[in-house]
Length: 243
Image 1 (tube, rainbow, N blue to C red):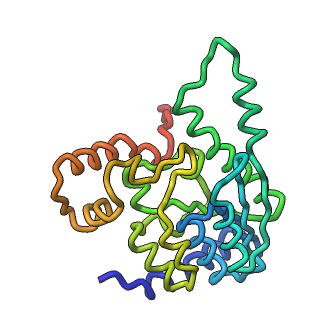
Image 2 (cartoon, rainbow, N blue to C red):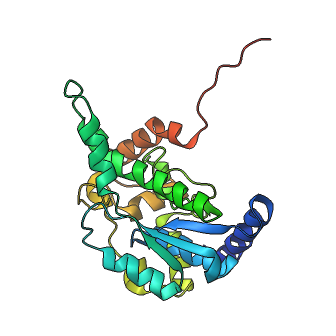
Image 3 (tube, rainbow, N blue to C red):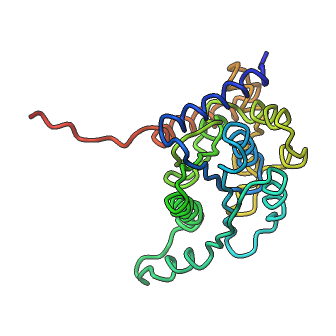
């Protein structure tokens, strides 16, 4: 019963209100990966603000195999865009680590998205911008994001929409089919999202919206991931002194 047209229109209106209240005349700065989420967020911002107020930032780390998808998106929307290759920054930090402190596998995986977010804020502060978060509800539900990396941002159009719902909006916005339906990859280790997660987005979306799932093992995994990753969606705990 998802009304994609109504939700799309409401989201566009919400983006306009956000900018009216938090930066009249500012630009929306969107990291463009070539995947569906950044494509949909950029298209929503274009409808809300106009193409002249949306800036796409392409951030390959060395050679990005699907960079052509990101280029296709910015050309389709007609938005200004910049390319900032983050490889030197990533390698610089890795190379600066002392020999006695070996980098963990998870550190290596999460460093690029954190560098990308720092890059987005550098562009944003240089272009009078506000940074868009491009995470969706399905990813957030199981913590499939990097804290202070792709999980950061100033406003988030898709954080309450599942993958299936976001894709309906993407088609409604007239985005190229291949961008909306592109198999999502993490962009970090070369695997698909579903390979990493151990379940499909269709199974996850259905469980989020209805509570229904047949595979008890997948249910247990989703519940565990949801529980241990809740901190990513909350403000950091702070000590409240009694004064």
